[in-house]
Image 1 (cartoon, rainbow, N blue to C red):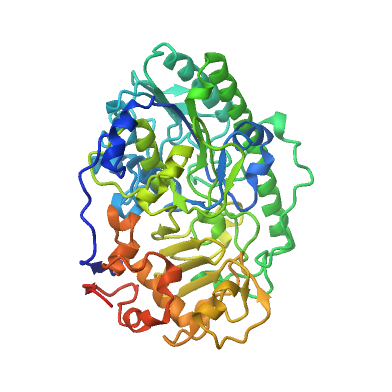
Image 2: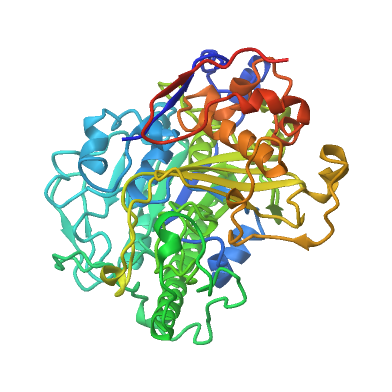
Length: 587
């Protein structure tokens, strides 16, 4: 389906995993073992955006997690759709490593996860082996059904209550797995409230073994679209809030000040550029959709408060790391003339919330520059728990705590790049879905953020169309102000501009190797060339695959003109053509 490029030189062999973490130096191993393992509560919402500030609608989360912990603003989904993203997290791998690329057969779903042998070689089992009491309630992934739950039990858990298809996305008629096998139907009960009820019970049960650390995963469906369990069309409708929240946010509006909001001029690439401007009626519907998402999140906000209160009542709040995130983002602001959805390479789709509170985690901190993903979060959970994967995973350990920030130099500092991937058809949600013609949304993309200088988004579609967006304020020629004299002393640009909403595609400009945009393109493309087929160390340190001598470790360094000829001769990321190349040592 997709042409690949094999970079055969410069990939580092990963040393055997250490007992406490996959990438800690050996002299830290004993200290890690001596540290008390934290309890971990992992809360993952469904389809929650970061760009439209959905977290701002959750006052309890703001008070109990954001103010008491660290919020990461550059946190991403490895693949912006439910099951593949969750699979990537559960395996601490990027999506092409898991090869779970869709929500259903033949390319995804719980049966395929089992067929690949991942059940038992995943985060719950690794935590179990590290002597954790592991429990999970809510949505695990698509394809867990009322028909196959008994035949495909999840391994590594003491107790579980997974939401089961076709009831998973029905806000008022959930169905849950049980360890004994029979399905538990909860008709006419609100799904998020039942998940909260079960989560609190799991915490009580875990407290019965006070000498054993626990991991409790909690996965409500909000703010995902509603899908009625008995609707054979599986139509994705506006989320349904609980009646106690249905009148909230009456004044919530779409952000019409964004230049991406239902623009007069088409934007994006491929079929996105062919979308018609939305009617006023359509925009009003999307606004209702957006408001319902905020309302549906209120039961999750209440869940956060009840979980924190339960941990405090148990006397273990200060010993517990609470992690709040989502599987993928969501577009619900009529951006690029789009209907509600989540599968494209734009920031709304891939940028997701991450807030962490716990022992050693800085309080009230907002991290605006570190770039991490759910793959890295899983690797970090393995690290802080002292667990160990039985394969070479792709994730980089995040410096969540004060201690890990001090040790950041052992992994080259904060991660500054992220790989996004997607396969096959676009997903459109809401009542206008069937009237909109979209198409194949297969792409590979990379985000690069380096301090105040560098903030780029790059994507290559299966049509071989390219998108490059400069997400920060720049001079009109595209050169960051602080880099202007360093990179190109002849640049005479003066007008400042910024493109955080990804409307001005730099790839439509002159991309000749001698131009600024062309040089930027060759560097981003080389980085994507490595990441799109990376594994293990090359996912964590892709620049080492490009510069085997280790002289270049950032995009800023790679933009030096002395590397122009080297980058110009590298192969390009493209589809429908097999390319095999060996990168040789460069000057």
